[in-house]
Image (tube, rainbow, N blue to C red; front, side, top):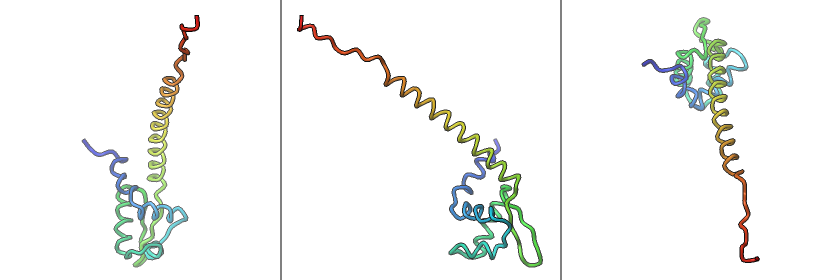
Length: 119
């Protein structure tokens, strides 16, 4: 069975470097060199992260001479946003149902014990 896109991107989303790259690219197109200035790793390492992000469709690249420029891929980011919305809607529905069940179980009618010795 093929992996879902959500599953394929989970390890990518889990990386602080990749999340930061997406955040930086939210400000617009940037070269690998410009992006690498924000990290204590080599340009080569940043290129590898960007290639992985491009492979799953979250960023796109264009070449200009010897430089490669990256930007967010609107289709991939839309897909990510939709996946996150579906995930959180489902999770919040589950949380709401659990909270309602907990509330219902703690609101059982309380009957004070009658003291029969007083009669």
